[in-house]
Image 1 (tube, rainbow, N blue to C red):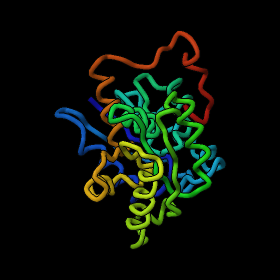
Image 2 (image 1 turned 60 degrees about the vertical axis):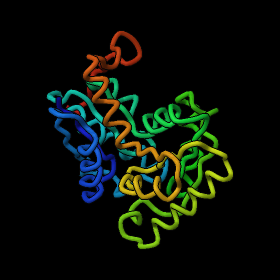
Image 3 (image 1 turned 90 degrees about the vertical axis):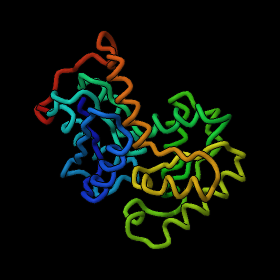
Length: 233
């Protein structure tokens, strides 16, 4: 089985880290490749970034018919529905997978993300995915995406935000609202004493499960394969 993990931003170090986290959770016989569109924004922190990143995500997926399933590794799930139209295998976004996974772990969950400007979009995603009632709160740590890799205070700021979020929301689990937070998962779980869901791991294992079940996006209605523009090959 081959899974392609697409990091919608163009930061190579983040792509490498995302790929490592995805490979750590798959079973025997599963190959994971992580890529990013070279022309995308360096980080995705706004609606404009989402729109600019989506064509690159679609292009990466369109050129890989040899792959069995795909992960969109940004918590805004940019281009997810369009990706399901053009892909032959299942496509899972990390926000949808992370939040749905958290619903198995308790009555409610909290999301801790990067900048405050992303909070509204994440709330909209939760509502659209049908988990708005279970999402007790979305909280911004104030740490920019790229600063997660370089700012020595990033972990403490995320931890402090998470601890306050769980107390305020009374949640049973925490969902990390950025692919760049994946390497904080184990440390946060130990410090907080609650399940912490990394969307990269959740989405990758969900794609693996769907492929093993022989399932992919239905192609007889809304998600039928469209005529592909030259941009996508």
